[in-house]
Length: 345
Image (cartoon, rainbow, N blue to C red; front, top):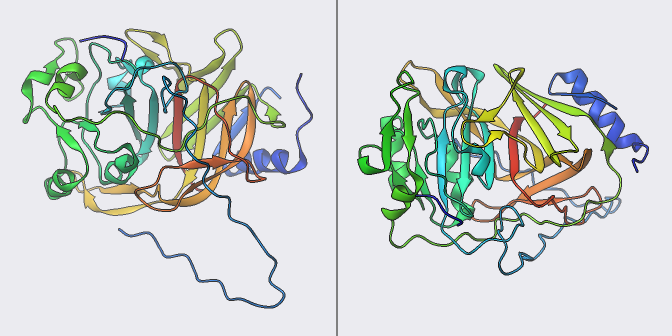
């Protein structure tokens, strides 16, 4: 199934941030189990008054996607876990996704969680297994379809109990196919339309906290930014001709077999805590758990500039809001968004 579904000088704070991140090995620029409870503050007469930014109300205009800000009809959500090791590239269907998350998995490599609503490509993949982090990450989406190849046996009860509609090759074989030109396990592909058809009560996409509009003032002009994981590397290079950020994975241009080079309009490097989970893969390696509830720093890339930002998600049921250092809502550029869930430095 397919269908429509003038640079300023960098501020001292942002320059210092970018330099510090480069030195730490997390960023490089060229061309210019349970969350730990937050400590309860102790009130003192001399404590300075601070204000926590309030999450902005939903401002998604009617007829526009809450994930891209582009015109789109209301439609349900299909999320797909996508393989991202070298043998799985180039992937299929990534260029059509509204939103792509990058998550760390065992061995320090990454997998992708691609979210579709505005358009469903004919095929997406290669599809791989789910992780515990996906449950919390997808809660703000309502009850999306989650397509994956399987999961560690102890995790399956949590996936079935979550606010998700799980779709696997076992539960919906008609929604999958095996590519003859790829070796297993990198040969499993999803037919998103068929996956969606298994959930007659699927809910339409809803607000998850993103805002779209003109770029905020400031930022630093950058040619490229690199994000490093223990065993993976992503580089985002600004392309004025594409009005987007060309993606490279481990030093090679990232492409989709059906749409060509990947070039999101906005890239969000969201710094998060990555800790061991209670689960492990079939080889005994402990699965990382990515904490997406809480708050922290972020770097937002749009329109050829890098901007400091803050992210906040108070509860698992709430969306993630992004604000400027001054507390104003941060508007993304309309178009595909990549959220790189990078370990805190």
